[in-house]
Structures are given as structure tokens and as C-alpha cells.
Image 1 (cartoon, helix red, strand yellow):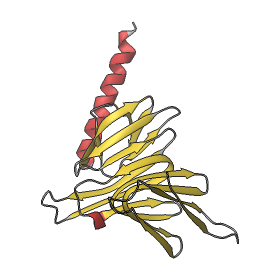
Image 2: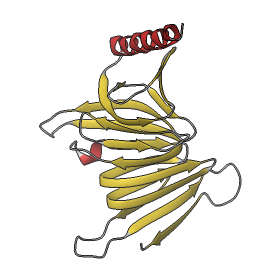
Image 3: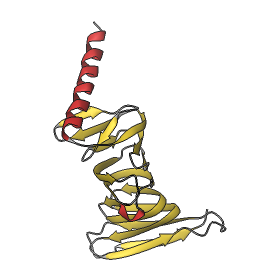
Length: 202
């Protein structure tokens, strides 16, 4: 009696993966998944487990106490903290390194992003507050309500807030002491200043 529900869940999971792969391009693999991690593509929703593929245009979400790490085909690594959501818009990758485009939309939660072997100018992370461009970067970002917080560990990045303003940062030279730079940007619906910026050493 107890094996029937498990069988039905397993069958449903397989069907969901097949439906995803039939309609969209597989662009990465789940390197880790703890607790409730789901993927939604169109009307199809599935539970994501270790080793599962992820697909272009798929929306990934983590629940309370859940985490996930996705390794993409260009070796980019995206780690998601609890209560996070991201949409995998596009990945085009030419292994020769001459052509590539990577675009995701992070809507809420905490993320760690490590760029892969694609052209650095091809990476883009959209958020409700603006667009983040990366240049060979290890970047952590947090989206909580109207606030976006960025912490740069290595490489360079820029943030174009809405409607039009930009901030940029690069990591220090290899001989410098390790530092991280962070920004906090508020999504403005009032007359308050749109952004504040700060840098700190760690």
C-alpha cells in the first residue's frame, strides 16, 4: 500500500523531465539539491533532484531551508539559498570561447554566481532593481523586498539601475589584500534616493 504513492511520484517526475526536454534546450545540471527545490516550465512543475537537468526558460525555486547549486554547460555555477527564485532565460555557448550569451532573472532570494568559460561580456543577471553585468566574477547577491545587495569577491561587475544610472567595481590586483565590495540598491517607488553605495574590506 505504501509503495503506490512513491511509484506515482517517481512516474510523475520522469514525465515532467521528459516534457521539459521535449520543449526546451537543456543548459545545465543540478550539482546539489537540498529539501524543496522545484522547476517550472509552462504548465509543468517538477521536483528537482541531484543530477537532474535544467532547461532554458525554466523557473527554479527553493523553499524554506532549501538550497541548490546548478552547473551550466559553460561551467558557470549558480548557488541558490532558501526562498529564492530565478528564471533561466538563455544560454548560448561556443566551446571555442568566441561566442556566448548567458542571461538569467533573479527575482528574490540569495545567490552566489561564479562565471564560467564563456565570453565575459556575455553574462547578464536581471533583477527587479536593475541589470548586473559581470567580468570574470565571483558575485553574491541578495534580493529582499525592495533591496538589492551585491558583494563582489573577485573580478569586476557593473549595475545599471532603473531607469538609467550605473555603478561599477573591479577587484584589486592579485598582490593586494583580499577585499570585497558591496552595494545596496533600493527599488524606488517614492521620491527617496534610488541607490546608495559603499565599499568595505574584509
